[in-house]
Length: 137
Image 1 (cartoon, one colour):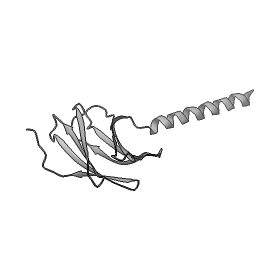
Image 2: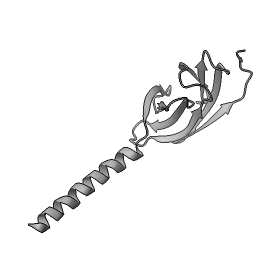
Image 3: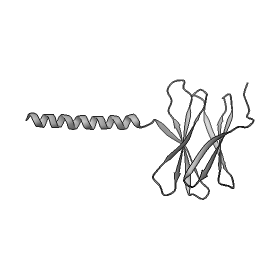
Image 4: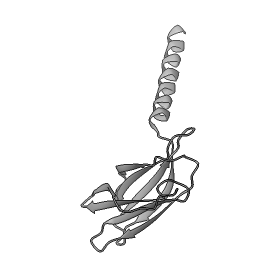
């Protein structure tokens, strides 16, 4: 009888620990945007990470090929602004297959930030594009 009780205790402890481990590793993020490539061979996913009080918003950028279950992180966009500001985005594909992503914020110090995502053979690289941007006063 004592062995059964001990076995149940270890099983419940193992299950509880496993659930805690899964919930600890999962980031709180919401799908913010999904951009399909013109040839539909891959897509870029944008997740807005949940931030707690007065922390700057962060956008996590992921890459996934058409017939793959693997979602690869390619970078993040940390916006040094208040997390209450509304963010929008626009994008444009070049003829070479590069994606230009513009993140807009109406009431931010920098109203638009531009990023380039270079994609080649199951890899993608996110880089900021330095340009003349409007600054609000």
